[in-house]
Image (cartoon, rainbow, N blue to C red):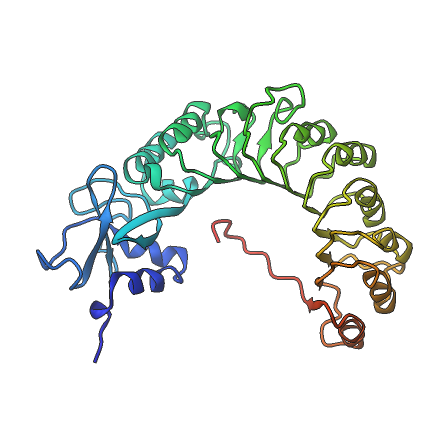
Length: 381
């Protein structure tokens, strides 16, 4: 009979990757193998070495009572990571760190200590980083600093994706972000008026391909127009950016004609006005996702003949009396030569006659009709 300790490292790592974050924290720590020269057999398994020579060990059971997840037997701090095996070495590819959770777990945790963990145990192996800040913890709470983010770029030259949640970036210039980023996500963050302005250095973030701005209250037309300096940008997601106006959107998309993916969710602009701006300026867009508030059949019809559109998602739950009928949606979609995916989310049509009409009328498309997913309160998920 095969037990957990008989499985190879690669299989164990794959199994552990499916565990919830909190369970992965409980099984991740540093320490010596209890079997001496047999690191691959036993309750504790050595998976590789960090830049400082410290071995990374996955344990099959809970941590000893009283031992912090950020401490090993010798008292040295370690970072919790998702590891993947490559040529018998564990690569630190994805890290999710909540400063607020770390502070609760490890008393006195500050951004300086968190950066020590990243620098010592991740370094060049870090590809994706997700961090939460102290935005709602008062003015005395520690915040991310420009120096820390600059050091992050210097010590982690392969960092491609950075996700910041509930962080106060009002004193952090965009020039301090790692220049290697290809994806930048801001969720419930505060930014200054100087962020993303068009007059800033055009060489900032030269590789940036995707930017997600979700519930960033300060984001406005001037910031949207400033995105035009990112010439590598191909994907733009705006969520809850209520300060963006129709005039600002139209002017910005005119200069962002090279976008291939555009999403606008939960904003104050109507779907009709958004689709009109898209049809005018984003003729090469491949994926569109937007909420259906203010959507009508004539508004959807402006997308007819879009030459490159491959995926269209209409997201509820704001359904209005002017909402296009399933037959009208089919009629418009049939004029889009490359459309292969139609998704209707949160409209209450799942299992109804509307779903049957859509599937029958669009046999060349993958039609997805489903309810809106429940939004997790845990940002690290």
